[in-house]
Length: 389
Ligand SMILES: [Zn+2]
Ligand SMILES: [Zn+2]
Image (cartoon, rainbow, N blue to C red):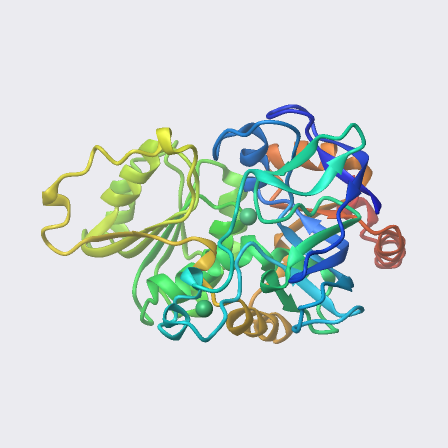
């Protein structure tokens, strides 16, 4: 079927919307009517090849919320009309040895995430479109996805909130709960306060951490960090970040630290502000070439300091996302405050530019009807100027 898709004709070129052919969904796939797809910085990195090179036209978009439009013959989890979010993370089968050991990521019965391979879209000139950032591409009016990537969205959760939960929020918040698992009162530092870092700060607050120290070179992001629960902010442009964090933690450094931004030297700074008995979790990353850890020595870990990483919050999709919806409903996490500006799909280039200029999380609205509803809502609220630029 003919649909609209935002794509870059070659790696790193400007993204624009064009008509493409969407394949029929496979046996385990659903066709989704995409309502919103929020922008994650991985979409930008993927387009430019920073996460790995690719050949041919490329399409991104992996924070998807929408409505099931059609299902393949063997789909059992959803039916047409269901509201869902679609994430890169796959729900495991629940039956295999890995799933039974709480490692659905390594499920033996669901195809692994496949990046930078041709997917369900073909250009009208016959070129297959590479899905640069996920097992699907969501900056489109319709897309296909394996049913394991879906989690049902409760009726009262707005699509744009579902989108934000699908990657950015879970990557930060989930990493705190699932990987760091801090005890109340332990100290926590987040280096890099974009959407993922701010979600990690919400996670640290949720777990009762103190102090919660936000580290970033952008004063606007540090101000946002305070709103999301940071008790202290540190700007490495204005001071020695390691010294400052140590002064806030009786010279020990923090119990837990997270790097939520790409860049080689940044990991070393984060490591140095982590206590000798603490743990650092790497979440943000750039190209593998830029992320070597050759500054580390055996002495760095002799007193039990741990280095680990976490992808997509280490979540079990259909266990954790329903919890996040509860926390959102109860006002315990402010996912809505992560959303910056709204753009219709045709203006995706502007949305991406605005993200590169520092917007926390922009919402690309792929459904015309929903766009009209949002405009009416913002007009009534008097928030149109703040939300649509
Ligand atoms: Zn993402
Ligand atoms: Zn499994």
